[in-house]
Image 1: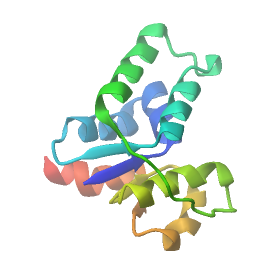
Image 2: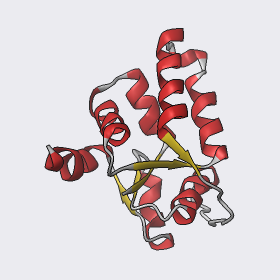
Image 3: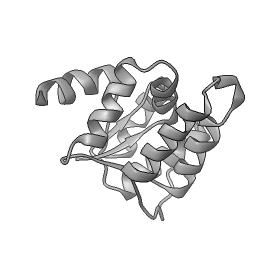
Image 4: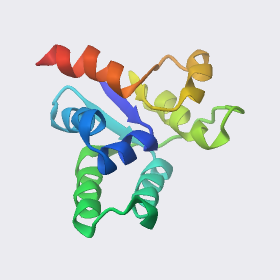
Length: 137
């Protein structure tokens, strides 16, 4: 199963832990899951995690950077998706299309308007946890 993760989910995992962290660690540790990213998404992840207002310690940042470097699969995205609702989010949809992702996990409700643009299931962290993570235990 191929999965794209929105930056807001990664930030929630790094800052608060709980469900977002549990979901990401499930994906990382599951041989059935592939966390696909584009170079642009990976750059955004690292830039956002480095923001001082998140107040992550150096060791927290290092932990998440190591997870990103070890667990993500970098793909070439040669597709553009027109998503006028939030142009900054188009890169996640394009990655989902190019990577033939099964799921796009997000906390951003803007994506509900994008469900007809891709075959990828757009899903919240809590629903993914309930339907996939908890089901596999």
